[in-house]
Amino acid sequence: MSKKTLKRIAEALERMAPAPLAAPDFDGADAYVWHTEPDALVPVQNVSRVDLSLLVGVDRSRDTLLENTRQFARGLSANNALLWGARGMGKSSLVKSVHAAVVAEGLDLKIVEMQREDLGSVSRLLALLRGSEHRFLLFCDDLSFSHDDEHYKSLKAVLDGGIEGRPDNVLFYATSNRRHLMPRDMIENERSSAINPSEAVEEKVSLSDRFGLWLGFHPCSQDEYLTMIRGYCDAYGVDIDDDSLRAEAVEWQATRGSRSGRVAWQYFTDLAGRKGIALG
Image (cartoon, rainbow, N blue to C red; front, top):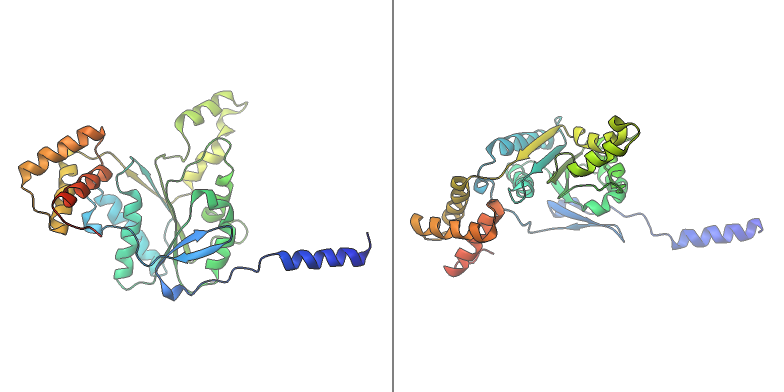
């Protein structure tokens, strides 16, 4: 094949290639969602979240994450954070509420949510954020990995940064039901079948060690569960006496077979609807 032909092919491929994504005007919103195919940072004007004061039973995690986020927004050193533990206990709600609280203090901080499935594109996203004067929380909800999942390698680009290093204006927060981001039985199976058990899963398990903050979330007590619901009632103006609330809420949790912040909100949503109160 001649050089002339090769040149024409190269030029044709260049024309077909998508132009590099231009960074959006970050002054237009405080929250964005990262999409791929094609790459796009989509602004979110109305973020689904609750007020920080309504998150009950997570005081230590709330205070720690709030201070860490505040430090970062002020241009100071701060740690990537992994929020792990029981389902429905407000891990993702806390991240979004802390972001709102810091912005309400007048600090410049954007939040960008990305899906675990899109971690392979994180280097392209970081390239966009790196050149901005703003500071960003990169947030991934429900993060976990299976034994054949290669996305964990992309996560290292966020936590360690490789040669370039993680941009100084980006901090990574993730939530997971698993402390080590992979199932315990998978860890044990790989250890038992490996030639060198100590190294079999070290690469994946050590991912969680790369988070400077580990914040654990545990199932709530019945008193905390009822306190959550009473807080929602007071905040939204739903009138119900304590005895009725307790009887209904306990029955609701029994039918769900679990007790958590999510179950508390689901009961309250039903209660508000019956009382004619709109939550939107």
